[in-house]
Length: 174
Image (tube, rainbow, N blue to C red; front, top):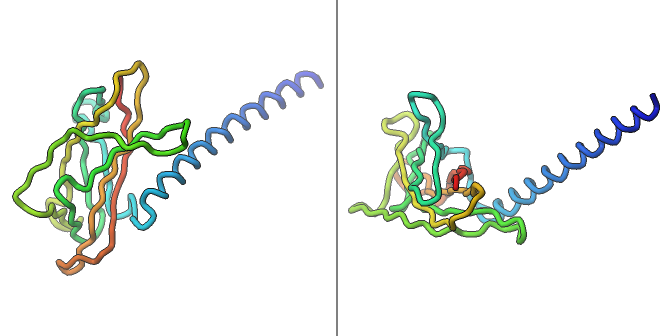
């Protein structure tokens, strides 16, 4: 009886230790990301989302070499202004260096306008689709990329100087 108790206690401690290590790694990853955008409010006024297939209600899957399509949704009462290309950045976390590595985007963004305006949540359209084409090496394992967009809040039609943004992690399959 005592022996089985020790085995169960040992397994519990091992499981707890493994979970703590994973949580520590995630915390380190998120801390490194927050350092990239210290003055930007992320995922509060905006939401960047993977579209869902209507027929089976599952998110789109993306593969290395594919373009990635995302939805950008304004959750705020303000219009948000973006540079052409949405101020888009792509990263992948490097476990060896504990830093986010920038990933090149082959997507091209053209517009006659100087800015892209995303209406407030009370005015249609308050969302838009956007695409990107990350340059990723061919490999056998999925790659998780983090896509980030940054815009500026407009108040009464005027720039406020307040930056807002959104990010989403996207798994790219081999």
